[in-house]
Amino acid sequence: MTRIGILTSGGDCPGLNAVLRAASRACESRGWELVGFCDGFEGLLPPMNHRLLDRRATNGVLHLGGTIIGTVNKGHFLCRQPGRTGIFIPPEILGKARQTFQNLGLRALIVVGGDGSLSTALHMHQCGLPVVGVPKTIDNDIGATDRTFGFDSAVECVVSSLDRLHTTTASHKRIMIVEVMGRHAGWIALHGGLAGGADVILIPEIPFGIDAIQRVVSEREARGSHSHMIVIAEGARPRHGWPRPSSNNPSDRRSLAAAELLARELADSTPREVRSCILGHLQRGGPPVFSDRILGTAFGVKAVELVEAGLLGHMASLRNGSMGSVPIAEAVQQMRRVETGGEAIRTARATGISFGD
Ligand code: F6P
Image 1 (spheres, rainbow, N blue to C red):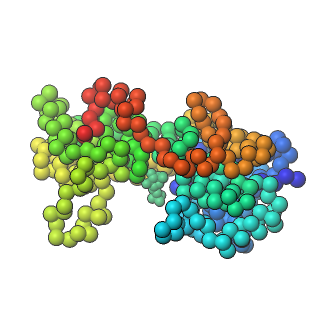
Image 2: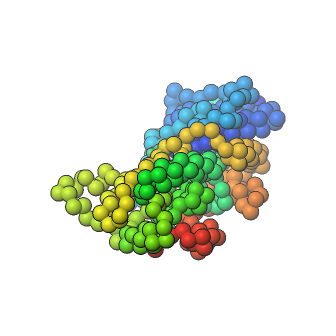
Image 3: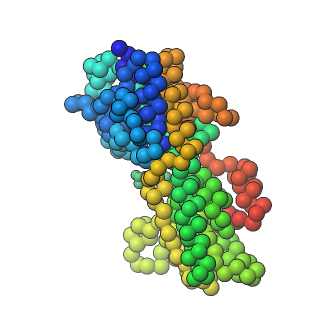
């Protein structure tokens, strides 16, 4: 009996269960067995926390958010060493994982994760463990794949939230600042803001000026618009950093989110009341939209095909609409950030959306 393992690691995202279900069925059709390790890589450690992912275990999960085998974004495998780039797995931890592979007779392990978890998978592969990858993040920022599942569901959450916020913001003639996820890449803010009718979109790739946002508000007021919708990615920053806190307490500003910091800056300099709303983990929860179910399913099938083809150290990847694979090393080398001259930015600018630059 060929047996393969699978685990989900890092922040959860809608579509993970679609991957597990598809991998289970692809294994079943080959007469293979799939075991799911619980709570990410931690499940590989003694006393081994795993469960059989057969048809019965994966029935009725396609529409569920989260992951039925759990995940962690910390733990024994995700160690960074001072002065050393990349992920380093302590040798004793690696040894225990190797023992688990041997005890269960695993032909391979499918790691479903973002850049941190895929870097761990790469390190395992470099140490001789048979691993393949599936890219996962709502942020859509993993290199070497055009799309990750979870992104569309997160954007859908942003868009439906903006639909709600528009009506209350307009009724009160306010400025609403909506913070969305995206520490290093602004894909969610860009697509959510574009589809949700934002007036200003602020992303990590385009440092903004507070004065530019004030100008947008003044111009819109002059044209007769008295409510304003600003979408800001959590990692977006003003060109010269956030102004120094006026409070004497320096810890005061550190605890504030980007939307709150911006609200402070705009409150005194605009004629309107300012409110902020942080969407946070709402964007990661709930059922996957149809496209994430399909993409998760395609990735799950592809991962099993990679194991069958012996393409260890590779990751499933979507390129120009086709499912293929790339070495994991290539995927973790470079983050996929928003191209500032790209199509979506040009479309947004052409419809009058400001990026605060
Ligand atoms: O990487 C995915 C992500 O959703 C980021 O956009 C966000 O900054 C982070 O995870 C939040 O992680 P946590 O669940 O640990 O707060």
